[in-house]
Length: 405
Image 1 (cartoon, one colour):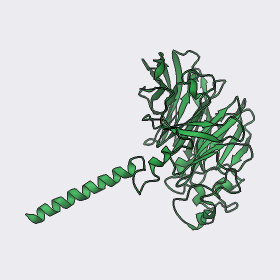
Image 2 (cartoon, rainbow, N blue to C red):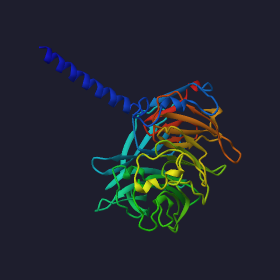
Image 3 (spheres, rainbow, N blue to C red):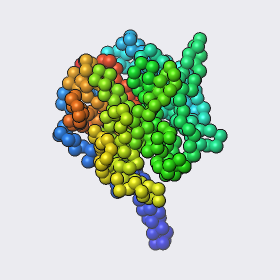
Image 4 (cartoon, rainbow, N blue to C red):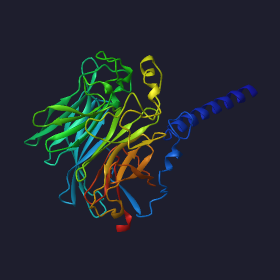
C-alpha cells in the first residue's frame, strides 16, 4: 500500500514539474532560466515612461488574424479594404484574402466579407503583402524546390477580369536548408521606396551555419548574392541593387516619405534585437558584430564570436534590446493624424513581449528618446496605421483613443 502511494505521489510530482517547467518556459520565454531573456528588464526605458497618461486606450477585436496585412483602400472611412496574407503550414500554401470592414467611429466590424483572391502553393513561410500608391499588390514568401532547397521570392498579383494571377518579380538563389529554423529567417518585409521601386528585406535563412562555397563567408557578408541584404528592385526594368548589407533576420521595415527615414527591425541572436536607420551602402555588421551572442558553437561561428557583445567597425543600430523582446513589425504614426494627437511621428513596434511606443529625434543623427511598453495585451507580428491614427494589428485588434468615444 505504501509503495503504491509513493509511486502515485512520484508520478503526480513528475507530471506537475513537467507542466510547470513547460509553462514557465513558454510564458513569453521570460520568467525562467531556460528562457531567452528576462521580461521585466524591458520595462526600463531610456527615459522613464511608466504609463501612457496622454490617452485612454481601448481595443476592439475584429476577429481576423493574419501573418501580414496592408491597407488596400481607405478613401471611404466607413468602408476600409484590407489585404491579409495568411499561411497554412499543413498544406504548404498561403492565401491572400480581401476583408471589407464597415468602419463606424470606433472601427467596429459589422458585416465583413472575406474573399480569397489568390493561393500560392509550395511555400515554407509567408513574408509580407504590400499595396503601392497606384494599388499594385505584391507578396513575398519563402519558396521550396523539388530538392527541398529554399529561396526568398517576390510576386506581383495581377488582376484580370476579377481573376488574380501571380507574376515573379524577384527571387534569390535556391540554397540548401541548414536546419528547421532556415525557412523562418527569410525576412520578406517590403516598402514602396520611390515610384516604381521596392525595397525588400532578405534574411539569411539561418545560413550562417553554412560555409559559402564562393568566399567562405556568411551569406550576409557576401557580395555575390542577396541573402542578409536589403534589395532595391526596379519594377520597370526588374533590375536589382544591394541597398544595405549585414542583416540577420529583418522583420520590420518602415519608410517615412516626408522626412525620408527608413527604419528596419531585426532579430538578433540570443539578445541584440535591433532598430536600424537604413542608409544606402551601409553594412550593419552581421555576422561579424552583434550586441547579442550566438545560440550555439561550431567551427564556422567561432570565427565571428570576437565581435559579439560589441558593434565596432560597422554601422551601429539606433537602438538594441538587451535582452531581446522578439522584435517584429514597426510603423510610424503620421504627423497630422487626429486619433492620438500627442503621438504624432512616434513609432509603434510589435514584439513577442508586448506593444511598444518609441519616440525618435527628428534631427540627425537620429536616436531613441524613450521607449514605452504600452499597457495593453497586444502581441502582434505586423500592423497598419490608418490616416486617422487608429492602429490595426495582424492579430485582429484595433487600437484607438478611448478619450474620443
